[in-house]
Image 1 (tube, rainbow, N blue to C red):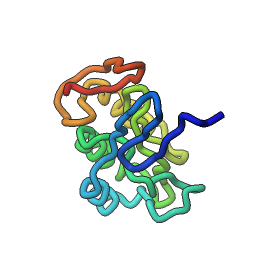
Image 2 (cartoon, one colour):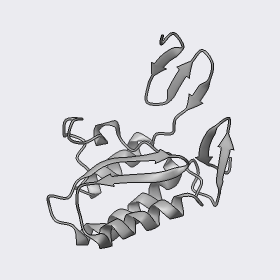
Image 3 (cartoon, rainbow, N blue to C red):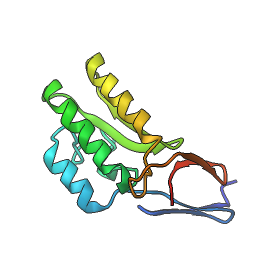
Image 4 (cartoon, rainbow, N blue to C red):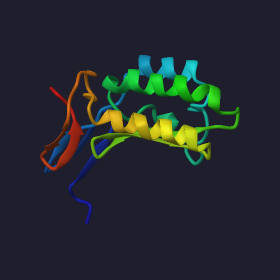
Length: 139
């Protein structure tokens, strides 16, 4: 039934039919964000937060995520938690605990901007369909 499932690492998912490189932020950028913003809690069990896997998007969105975090940091309390940050359908997804409409609006704005920024390098880009996968890349 699952004969064409390969293996998963931080960088590759391989099947007998397709090879797709998933973009994960490099460890250095992960650590910068974890150290600076305390609402990322990579030490929590994965039943409470998926940040233990790091940022599941490319380094090109580092500045976008950093800017978003600087905007929301003064608006949230110590119980605020970011559960997961990833790419989905070519755009940024930033999943959080309950918060104010103002914070949700800032997240929505950043998610909208992500569709115009290359996930890999950070240059202007657009969403493209690459073998059935929606991605935002210029290179």
